Image (tube, rainbow, N blue to C red; front, side, top):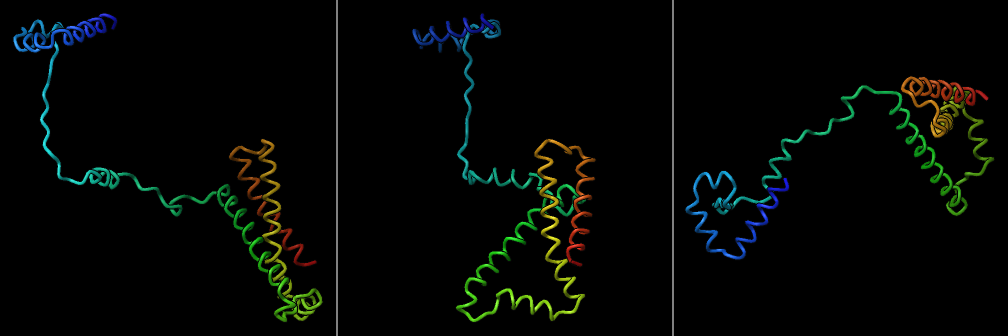
Length: 187
C-alpha cells in the first residue's frame, strides 16, 4: 500500500513538472511499463447528451419498489389491537366530553335543559333494558381505558414484556373491562 502511494505521488510530481513529457511517455510506453505502473493511463469517455427527463430514472425505480402491505393481510394480534383500542377509547371519551361540556355551558343561553334534574328524569323514564344498555355502552370505554392504562403502567415498570405475558395481559384486560362495565351497568 505504501509503495503504491509513493509511486502515485512521484507520478503526480512528474506530471506537474513536465506535463508534455508525460503525454509523450504514455503514447510510446511499452506494455511492460504499463503493467508495472510506470505510466499514467488515460481512458477517454464519450458521452452523448441525454434528452430524457432527469427524474424519469427515479420514477422507474420507484415503480419496482415493494409496496408496504396493508393491515388487512396481517393476522390480528391482541398487542396491536389493544394498543389501538386504548387510543380509540381515549379519543372516544374525550371528544364527547368536550362536546357535552360546551353544550352544558351554552345550554342556559340556548334554552336547553341539561341540568342534573333533567338528566335524572330522562333516565328514569327509560325502561330497565335501555338503562342497562346505555350504562354498559358508556362504562365500557372507561373501564377498558382504565384497565389497559394499568397494563401500560406495568409495562413502564419493565414487567410483563414477553410475548406470552402481553397476550395474557391483553385478554385479561378485555375480560376485566367487560365484566366491570357490566357490573357498573347493573348498579
